Image (cartoon, rainbow, N blue to C red; front, top):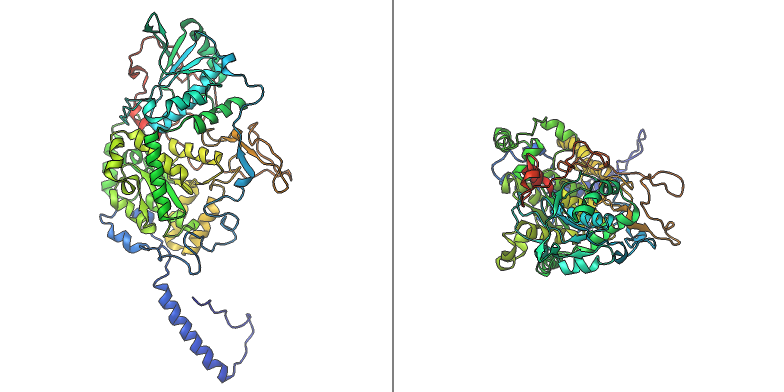
Length: 588
């Protein structure tokens, strides 16, 4: 396309042109205008529409008219597939690629223990056995498994392979060995904690465990004060609903143990891993780069959030009916929730954010999601923005997926593998899968991980009907700066350790990099070589389900149920919260 004409002369100056110059200039101008009009019909950016109309329509055809529907729509001339749009100097794209962080090469994983860390053959004490029962979906249970290993280390106890939650909302009967490689788990951690497959026996019969619960965010001192005395007298302790039962702040060696468990010891079984890798290969065959999106937009999630998405009386009525299932939920102001960034972004809003950041419509996108409220009508705007839309169901055949269909955790594990290997990962929520993947991707090279800054994006979405696409895109890039998965975006000690494993990430030394140091040793703010504090990105919006999200770590939580329970049915139903389903639905 030709370049736009510069206006004739500097302001305030007028010149005469000879007639022989005017006629060719006029002809060129007419030619330029004709070419421009023809180009506009093919090169249009996504129109800006009211985001609250996305659930109000009953037909996806409306959306398909609003956005480019093929690889050439919405692109700027002169850029190759997957390359960034031209952006203003306010954007982050001038410094960093859409698919990589240029600063990532300055950092490396460092989860090895220190010289003071003793082998489990020295620390493990006889007659001390710890059994844990995890809670929630796959990723919430993963956090419980990680913390159970660390708790056993604190107590100098032998850990029994954790029992997975088989009675929750997710209704998955899988045991540990059907999701994770149990032999690898035991052997990899052999020097950290002694782990056995089955509970200990005495006289040929399993020893009866003493059942108890510890508060959320229990510190090492809390474990030594509360659990150790019972462990010394009862010898076998069974801790129930084990999720987020360990402090976010531990000494460096224990934090590094968390990383070894989470990023190395927990490996999926071969059948799960093999299908996940097949799907990754199929995505790579379609495109050099791809985005993975973890999309939480289920009816239950929206009902709990109390948010309103423009679906009119039908939406209010349907979500209100779901909310009545949970007596403990209070009425919320839908607009206030959106203003505070507490509402998941709609599929349309996620798509607009990605396009504004510079991802073109011909980029391939893998979507990991459950049931979407509004179905295809709700997904239509996202598919119009990114027509190359894939899921595990579309990439695999019926025979390949059949062994996993009845098991929600195994299906979630397949999504986890593909999302982990994507070139850019984004989630419209801050559930456990989003947090764990964010931490994992930081640990393994700061792979591009986008956290929507929902609080700042919401007013921009509301105003975008009155903005040009260029202005909207520039504002999105400003808002998202600090939320793109760059090194040191988040200060050490801020956020949950699973999302920000700072103790396990070190900085290289060399001529072109700063001195090696662990990013986290303390919870103080980072300061660069000039003495200027580095900008820190705050979490985009609060987590709905984790009680530890906003509070400080404590060992004596009078509101937590930390008392000993010596009589408990096997299904742990006695100690579940009044609305346990609520937490389980939102956990992953």
